[in-house]
Length: 146
Image 1 (cartoon, rainbow, N blue to C red):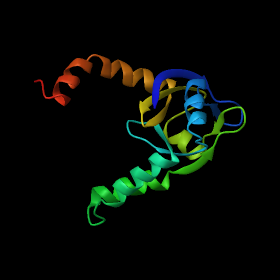
Image 2: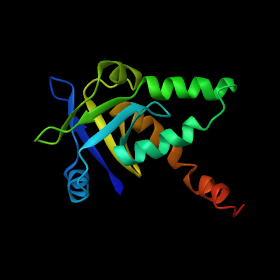
Image 3: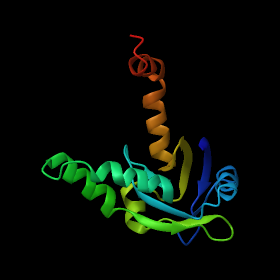
Image 4: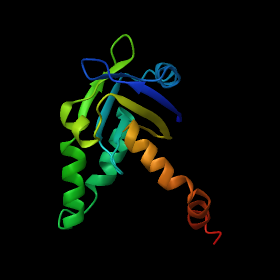
């Protein structure tokens, strides 16, 4: 559903405009509500309400007796905020999530199939540079070709 990479900047009120390509897909599916939370690798995750419910079911099934499961669920769910885009396609990013993702002004918004990720531009460049050299090797490991 979400694919591509887009550069944007936060406005003075900490809002980011969702790329037009994503807004069109969402409008076609009558999707208005989202959940934004702490992601992995220092980015923010944005899920549609339907996808959020799927993730919630998956994570609720983790054993609360597991230290790692408790730690993950606390970070993931305590960071969650329900958001709705305004009429111009802008979404407010809460201050605590901006701090988590080290977002100042410039961001990179990427589509990762079932979710949108928002990265500080600096962090995305760093992640991309560190990951692109291993892209083929990672693909081989994941696809069982090695």
